[in-house]
Length: 470
Image (cartoon, rainbow, N blue to C red):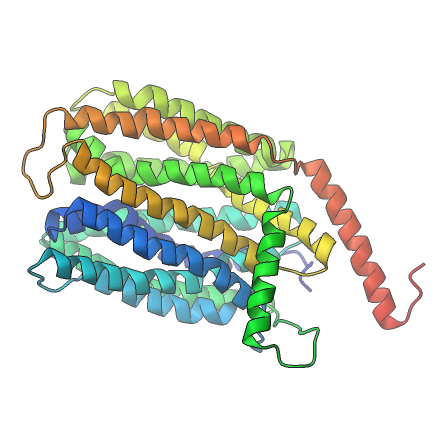
């Protein structure tokens, strides 16, 4: 049943949950630092420490959630129940995150952020890991997998727009900086409840319960040992490790890019926040969205590896060259950077699709389907980098002269931020593309893996039905 052709409506229905997931991630990545440092008044160093604590927990919980969802025996599937419940809880956590009470001391502000973001990240893991894992196992066909992850990126871009624009929309309705974030997170909560149900509904029949191979009940100690054995095997996968390392470096670049974006446009280019969102960030998301069919086509024509490499490489070169030379006060020049940046950034969908291909190799070796474990480690590694990036950035901003809550900043701050936002971020993208060249899973190799896997499954099917294998 899983090998039947998927309709676009089913792919879109599955992927729709990404709207809410990415909207929460976008608000956290774009607005959380500025909100807690400028509006709530938390010191940047304490903000960075809070991010380190909470995102490290979030990273650790990802492979655990993947392992759990791989072995869940609910009648309605291994992944789908977590998507439904996780959507509601994630929206609740995000609402509390952007609606803190009046807190007088730095200690209380820090503690509130740590506790609420801890739970928000836990709920994010509950929905995000099973959701991306389900996308990897819905189809056995590489072309369909590219389309599935293309749909995921499309809806992720809609979520990116929601996270970017909702605060500006609420400001237009007369809400201040604090209440606009609060109303935006509450709106996203409603959205999450709707799209998580859509994803749950449209994936009916595509998510099957875990079939236990042993009859006795497995103890907690046995589960823990099994989890660590699985982790060691995954990290020894010859195709997964270079792919993971490349994506980790690219994630470090994206973390710095998204966190510094508003500060760069405000302090270096002297542009207004609201105008930046409408005239630069919104077009970037638009260009990113319309690039998706291009990358799906290029992957179909040339395989996934070459387009993924050139997309990351050119994104890095663009970032290194353009951002230090953009003129102050201009919205037109950054728009050019947004066009090419959005075009090259669309190649990211191929990295997620490649993880699903790597799982085929694992299944050929082990006979197990472990999408949850692989995507759990995929998310864990990138979140560790995000946590370290946020922590490093908080201390770095203080070191280069950023003053929390100040109306005016040091005159040299703009250029210092530019160095980070341009050459440093761009250099990381280039490095990621070079690491990626060490990943040997070409389209030809993957086709051979799938051929062998199909043969193995046919032999097992014949044996189970009593038909001789030869």
